[in-house]
Length: 298
Image (cartoon, rainbow, N blue to C red; front, side, top):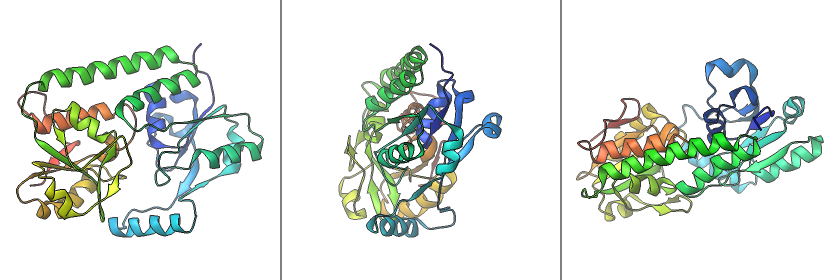
């Protein structure tokens, strides 16, 4: 069976999966943070809003998030009327992170209240393998399982090619900073990306949530390479923050990464992220990173 469903994606990574599966014409609703190609924008409604944090410092954003969560308030607003008008058949959401998107329970309650007939699929990957499984799950739910298998096979082939290219080479110690004020050591699938790329992840939380730490603890992990990939930022924003990080690691290389494009969103572009990290760690073994993917700061 081939697609043809009315889809709504309530998190940016799911939106990327939908487009990677060739289902852009079926996507009718997204969040304000989703990246929609120009060719599809006219046919897609924004059904989830949130605070515009552009211009806020990382510390101010962190304080705002903590205040909202402590008060039991949602960081995102579901435009229920707009959702009902779209009459979706499948809604993609998550329970992985309240900072990243609406939780699935909120969505399911809204669907029931509105009387929508939509199925709600929650995507909650913690590892790189989980991310690939979530692509299969979307493909199955959207009636294109063969496309999903082909996409995952291609991604796995690229990951295998990276591993082969860096096999047997010295593994430098790599810390990934997922937020800078306060500093967060990266978790979830990010240590997997470092491992695939031929590095030794340090001060990370494999298969678990990222967690706040201190610069002293990060230094104590003795990283040789520090990758600054703050959630919610592309390369220029990451580079601005990495400049403040460099002073904490005088003996390490410090790089900024396009976090939203390569690292923190649980979609197909994570493989681009693994390729980018491999290019940083083993520049003589793999093709150079794209200029818009990574930038050395120190």
